[in-house]
Length: 270
Image (cartoon, rainbow, N blue to C red; front, side, top):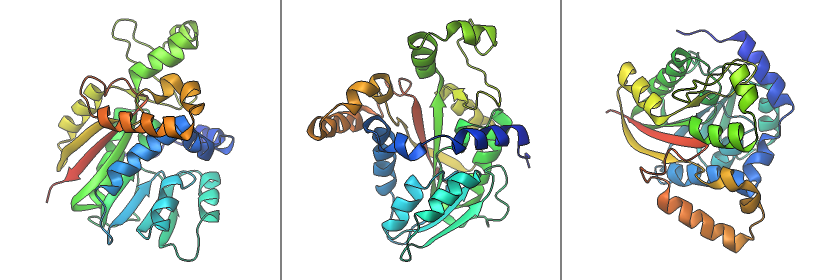
């Protein structure tokens, strides 16, 4: 089993101790990712669905699902985040929490959950070996016939937004963080976020040969982060139309790479 990376864990703890994750997901541009993920998730839930969220953060998804009556297990690495999550739990919620790492879920039995959410860890696991280990663990704890929701940060949106729009080209080149021929992006524990393309995800899945089939691959936030100021300024009626448009195109093959976050929905073979 791949072991946790203490240096990366320390950097993540420092970052999330000072970051308002709930604020990001409740802004209009942040809601696009959240509402899209919840829509695809709820389409697959039944009243007796057992859910595990790995990397639950401050509980934006876990608490909402538990409030809807689902049986939820939330695993989170960062104590600060876990404390915020626990503070949001009410007596009526069926929710258990664990402080744990996505690379080692040995405290959870295999074939246990109907739906396993991996909506944050793959953003931060630097090597493909680590990402493969986290995905393998997520599949292991999922029941045959169950779903795995895996989210990724996508490289080309970062090239457009961070490197060119925010004028970080010199910094990226000096740090050797980009292949100047293919525009692949590299990261370090200090940089925190790992950027991939769908082709990288496809290659990893093929190499792992996990007992899963892809149901859907989609752009979780699509255009929203490219035009976040415009989206955040929308009135509620305009934003509802924007969401309606986004959900109508987020699976289009010619648009799935034009997103900051993608969502890969896998189903474990029976």
